[in-house]
Image (cartoon, rainbow, N blue to C red):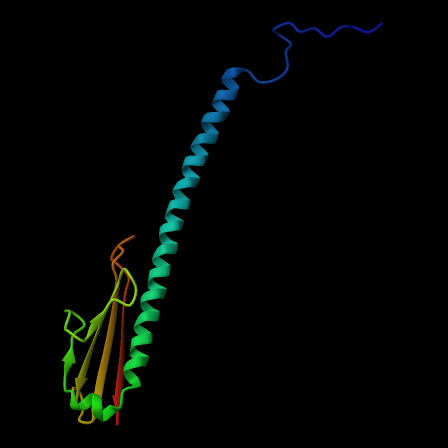
Length: 140
């Protein structure tokens, strides 16, 4: 004949309510710590995306400006600014991005033109907003 299991309070197997609550508290602390890392990672990814975007927009404008005939560009003289909005020398190629450019004729040496393009992101996620300035010096 088999012996019946004893279900008295002293021999019961399993977790007590205190043990379960303690495990849940430790689990919650771990989740909170990991969620902080995820939030930082999301912001860092957004910053990296902005840096890539400003670099691409600056390079695109620089390529467009290098397609202009040198003599036509030099005939216009110094123009534009990368620090202020000058009519005809700034735009917003995409929402949240400001692009400015300037052209300096014979700035360093006669027959040499310097083109600067600066793009700034309007979003400020971590630290300063992403920005990029590219410079090209061109001769006849």
